[in-house]
Amino acid sequence: MFLKVEDLHKVYPSGTHALKGVSFEVKEGEFLVVIGLSGSGKSTLLRCINRLHDPTTGKITFLDKDVTHVKGEELRNLRKSIGMVFQQFNLIKRRSVILNVLSGNLASMSTFNSVSENFSEKDLEDAYKCLDIVGISEKANVRADALSGGQQQRVAIARSLMQKPKLLLADEPVASLDPATSNSIMQYFEKINKELGTTVICNLHFLSLVRRYATRVIALKAGEIIYEGFPEEIDENWFKTIYGEEAEEVEIR
Image (cartoon, rainbow, N blue to C red; front, side, top):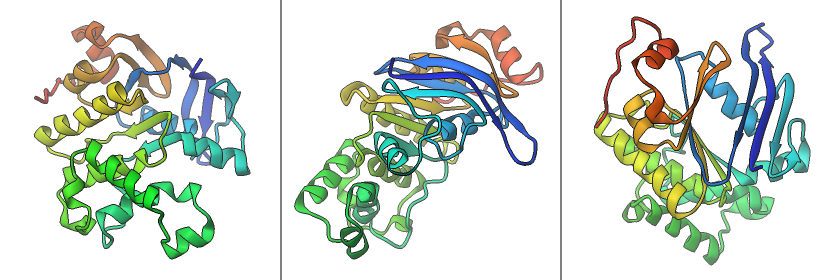
């Protein structure tokens, strides 16, 4: 099994019980989308998987290894295999696009080379390949803060690809973008999934995007899984169950 989450709980110091016994499995090559209202536990789930947050109880198995409580070198090695794309692009705005992408490989570099920015020809070649994948290599020497929001998110995706991740996590990657740009960004995740064979787990709000890109869907509500299945099976009744009786679906084309 590629990824297995078993009875996962996360309780924050504030007392908030963000995840309540979440269990599911992910096969290699899937494009799994997690949906639910804000505060349902979607972001906490992804951050527990890549161990930005420590689970309170439960078990996470990745590539047949228990990674629930790994620390130190084991944790660093885990994060090399798991890329992460955030809603807020987290770029170094005053630096060039290519330097931002190269920063995705810092975990694999020596301290001296990373501090001195002593990048090899292979590093540079890989960085340009990652920019090519998201169609933005012509912006390599432009400052990140000179780009549009959609372009910045493409740089963030390219940065995550520098790790050559086996699993790519995306936490609301289009929430800060306009509808037209949102669809184009999701196409790059689809490309990475289908052409590179990278397994993707993505948090999304808009069901029109979910139906277009997901191979399978999990819905969270108040920290619990209330739906697991195929996107086309989410009818109006399920939509109301997941988002509430007053919710109305917004479509992105």
